[in-house]
Image (cartoon, rainbow, N blue to C red; front, side):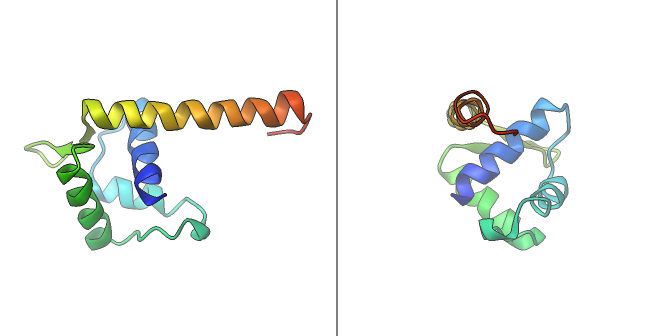
Length: 98
């Protein structure tokens, strides 16, 4: 679940045209519900980024930006697609407000 939250966060920040850094990512993760169980300190975010880099989902550039790899982008797009389908289900079929 943590990996999905990180991928989704990087994807959304990139989508907004932000330059994703460890600091910006840590700040963004603080806005997520506490129940997600994500560490938001710079050392914990850095550790997760290193792990995801080893898994081929992210890479860091020379100026310390965090970017999605092709594999990471495909995974993030899949997550976004599932979220948007779930939102449509809630609104269209259940008649609830998002």
